[in-house]
Amino acid sequence: MDLLDLWRDRISVRKVLNLIDHLPSTSHFVAAIADDPDLPPPPEEGRRSGPRLTEWTPEVRALADLIDRIGALIRVQVAQNSRGRPPEITPYPRPDTAARRAERRARREAHYALVARVKRRRSHPPGSA
Image (cartoon, rainbow, N blue to C red):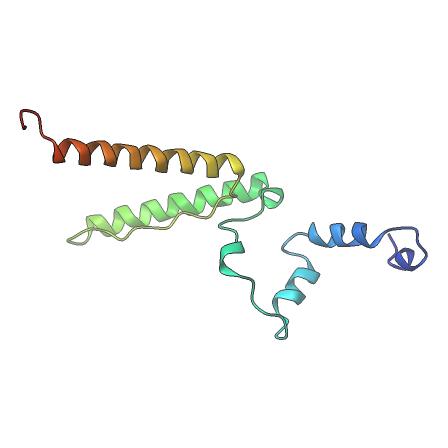
C-alpha cells in the first residue's frame, strides 16, 4: 500500500486509521508514539491488563507458561529456605477477553451474594426472636 493513494482518493482516511489502529505493539510507529514527549499519557482506565489477543501467539503463551512455572519454583525455594510466608509471584499477564471479564464478573457477583447470605444469617441466628 502506498500512502500517496490517500491523496489520490484510492483509499479512505478511515481505512488508513483502521490500519494504524491494528499495528502490533512492537511496530516502529507504536514505539515512536510511546516515546513522544509531547503526547499526554493514556488514561489509566483505558489501559489493558495484558497483551492483545492478536499478539498472543503460541510462542508467547509457551513463554508465559514458563515464566509462571519459574515463578512457582522460586516461591517454593523461598518457602523451603526461610521462615514465614513466601512472597506472592505475579503471573505473566494474559489477554483480557470479554469471556474472561464476564467470568470474573459472575465470580464477583456470586461472592457478594454469598457474603450477603452469611451476613443475614449472622444478624438473625436460628432460634432467635
